[in-house]
Image (cartoon, rainbow, N blue to C red; front, side, top):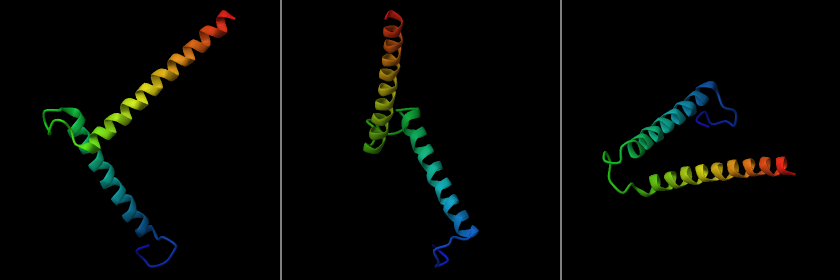
Amino acid sequence: MPNGSNHPESRDLWIVVNEMREDVAEMKAMLKLHLGDPATHHHPPCAQVQEVQRTILAAAGAAVLALLAAVGSIVAGILD
């Protein structure tokens, strides 16, 4: 902790919260820049953005598969 003890003070917490807000704002701006308009930044996008895009696509694919499995389960339940 910045105050030298194991117990944070409200000022220490405020510093950490502000640092986290800055990090989130930076990440939001980076994603908006890279994913918003591909012509704005370099093409193909950098490795970090490609990893985020892969993660988003994998999550979307998993959601679609789960939805299909749920629909199939409902149909199988109705046909029994």
